[in-house]
Length: 150
Image 1 (cartoon, rainbow, N blue to C red):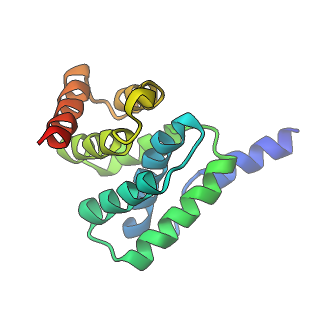
Image 2: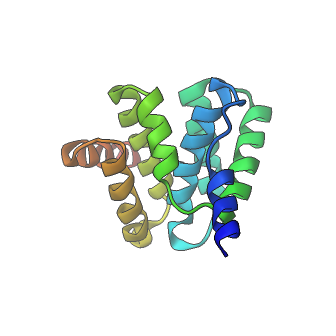
């Protein structure tokens, strides 16, 4: 049992061999997908929004995005939580970049309609782990709701 847990933690740690261009987008993808999976379903339009988020935040091509999402989907099964990914993003992103990611998390959640409370709980937890405050949480949500209305 202990060996199995050690294996899970070892796989969850993002390899130091990987480059900056894959580790940060992979960590962001894990958070975006965590929101999409909050209701235990991954809808195609949620997945498309994850792709849009990765492309706009990191200016990477579709092949790289597909590889990152495939890796994130595989890693999700063995993941023990979002902390390793938020820690990496806190180390590598400035506050403005973390706030931009928060907006994208809300965009993924915006497809759920009345089921959004599951996603909201996950986003609230991620907001805290990204060292963002409640006003950032509300501002990002309002930005996305304003976009959806207009």
